Length: 529
Image 1 (cartoon, helix red, strand yellow):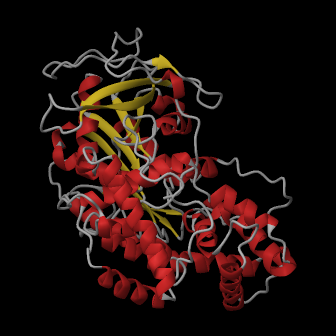
Image 2 (cartoon, helix red, strand yellow; image 1 turned 120 degrees about the vertical axis):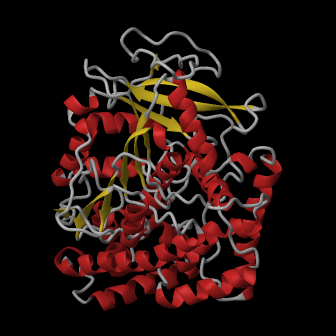
Image 3 (cartoon, helix red, strand yellow; image 1 turned 45 degrees about the vertical axis):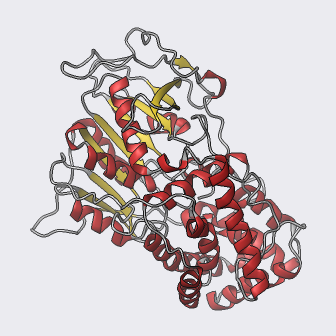
């Protein structure tokens, strides 16, 4: 995951425990039979992009099994409903784990058809440990500061340097957050979601999650199937591969997606001058990587930072023109400036990213078991590297704190569910972060679900990103529960198919903008989860 710092609700997030009646017309009447909780005190925190945003906070138990024990604070945001037809709260999550959902509420509300968004209180939240929630984790500030050791451990010295980094991160997390880490996990966040449901006085919630947020939604639905009204999941995690195997599957899929980028660069040889043979362009990319080991670009982009920079292109092809431009400038002209700029835009990690990564490791290391023997990590990842050199070792070091994590691990949640109303799943066939087969698995486990496939697409996070066909299915589902159903019998296949959007075009100038809906969405989504 690599996240951009976002302007969130900031100072408008109110003190924990402060509650008053919500503004007139902002909430539905309290449902009969729902335990009453004091409603959050919603205050205006709108931005130029999302002027209707409101913010609040909610106090919840650190350990939901001990409701009178230590308390933590969740930061909330919402765009309130404006229609007389009110369908309750729609909770949204951008993934990660570790992604902030405060701004996502504004994005979702403004991207859905107005008549649909108006029927919901669209509620975003910073999960426990994240962003404006308290406490917010930051295990080792500057963990990703350049220049890091080469991710490829070709010598014992390089391997020791990388091991020292990940061990230091895990130890620092344990020292700073010993009382918190055992409760930073998906189950805890799912129980927080139910606390939000109670606080807003709803008998059921609707939910819309991207990426890791699909797993979070499936876990909530497993814990509270009778409290789910609608469940929309975009770019679906394989819930049977949490989390070690999921990262290995990512490595293999990232390799394919990186080669898609290289093939696209070859198709646009006129713009980039790197040749028309993807194999030669791939060799040039790895040649650039080798050169950066010896002499980092601008003193800050070494081999590991190069991988960080190009990884977002495996999530979203809207970044390809910028990455190809930086690649070509370095290879053709020896110009490091565009490469450094691309790193600062796509790969560099700021304080918000440090926080997101801290929560990412806390959740992934706690949710499920990881190998604790480093020899097993070494053997596994060299084997993966033989097939997928692009991200095998970079991703291994990203997750390696789990080998030394200071808490034990839970068993993954079996999300198999026969008690839900129909869920709606969205998946691109070429998604690398959550490969297609995982969506088929989730489709089978969530009985009665429908699967909408973007055929030929490779982006991660595909609804509300410019594909009208996908967006119409989402809007119809949220409007009245309509789901597509394919003809015939059997499980595990698409109920509807949408064609992928056309690929990107080379930049016409250095001043070209990325201000599309797709780039806005992908700035809000976690880039690893």
